[in-house]
Length: 291
Image (cartoon, rainbow, N blue to C red; front, side, top):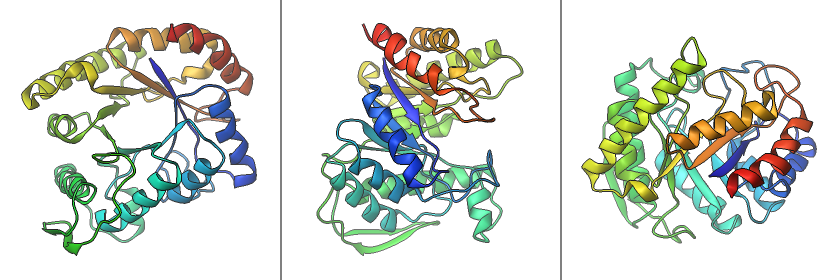
């Protein structure tokens, strides 16, 4: 099992930098931040840009992997995003993972974008991911899609990581699970919101079964495909206590998840918790669960 920590981009860098250093020093395998213009969970919170945040995080760390949680087509074009990703992957020395997902529609609405149905947003995401895959693996890329165009897009020098930056793809529905199985090096999910935690775990079990079917259909080796779980996605904060975290990680492992992700504790909801619990989990629980 590998362990990740999400640090929301809501604080000035003087306060955020020690958190990113601490995430590495505490032994977390990967650190993430949200990729939004504004997050619906904290619509009135201060918010900073994702790419510069991760670039700065790369400069104060040396081993922890860094990732977006998750990037969507709501306000990004694959060609301009590709340039940012190449720079970020280079600066962090190939420690970058691109989390990708359909996204909600709040960011797009902030830019005056059209209201799209869920089906349309999924269609756009598929086109977005496929074009981004092409841009990160080839040079001189042309595309004339419904949502995105590219005309002889140059992509040199290419990513540090070969054959390209790894995609960890958010997916709950059957179409996006198939896309994750085809293009992803991994999958990430928060499950589906339910009234009880037990019901949430049932949805996760069902999703892992659907993913296995999608991987088999693509001829992928399920044993080496990464499976990331947002432990806090059901509405129950994993760092509420040390015992809760350990129990949730155990259940995730039983379902075949290879990676779990929680959030840096905040003084109020969401993710309300205390730093002492995070430190206890990192120094006492995680080393034991790795063995």
